[in-house]
Image (cartoon, rainbow, N blue to C red):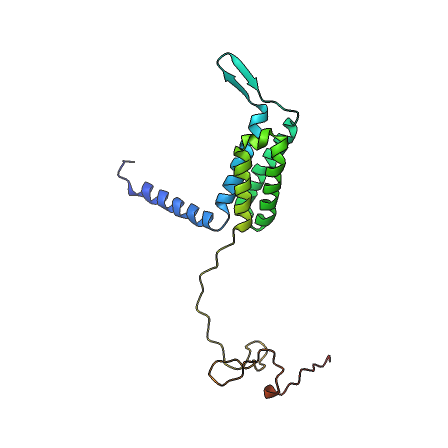
Length: 181
């Protein structure tokens, strides 16, 4: 293949547009923030920083707790990407895990992981799926329901028409009492 092959650019554009469509239908950025918040929380309790000839070990007694919190945040971040219906649960769980990481894991991964998880959890809770494009509805028969054939309640389509949506006004012959049989 030569460098001037147009198929390669077309495929890249195709996959980029597919990724954009996939990303737009779910709380992608919330999942990314929660996922990135889990890594510092997991890493810092097991890290050994070397400053010249000095080794600084940040190991704490909460090392296992930090690992569990970090792994759970990573799992919640991935689940936000692939199971968008759990966004509220995952967001609340990410916020709670971020708060628990403050005393357990070196101030929540030196506040880096804490802030990422907190912001991602808030984004997950506040995310709402977009509304689909409205398709023009087929014109329905005025005054009758298509499935039952019953008369629809009167609406205020024109000035002077009654605006009764309950179907129990004297104008349509009902008095509000319903039979059970």
